[in-house]
Image (cartoon, rainbow, N blue to C red; front, side, top):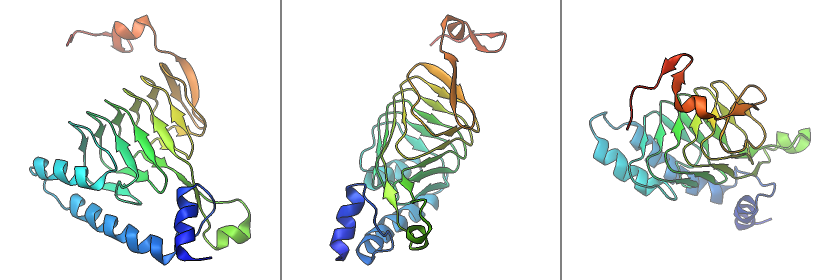
Length: 205
């Protein structure tokens, strides 16, 4: 099988070998850009913004990623809407595509993975891989330390509690938490009155 065929298999979500030279030679270009991004100074905000526009497949206005940022392809397969915020150590395993809507917030140490490996040990010994896209709707908050696995969709406005492992789709407008992540409740009228336990909202924008 030619190297170009491996690249096609990767794009189609089929099993492929990511160590293929035509894949890795392209990948290293984007990883070098990612390295440069992570070396920027905190005051170089305009430089960071411009670099992200060059690194990502798509990125809207007002996005901010706090270095260090980790990504298999340096954001090449990542699609951000507007006003996306990511705290320290966001890891995007973007061998497949990751779609993120407007106003999404990532807590520290969040991992979004599109890549998986077969259970069959012989294939895994050869590092065979497949990719499944991830979709995160607008206005989602993903708590610190969350892991999102390949193929998952999270609906708009939902909150994913810290430390969750999201193994299946989460609907819109819910609070979900746990390993595996499960829906606890819907977002309700009380959430419009209290921001944390018995603390009333006193800031109106």
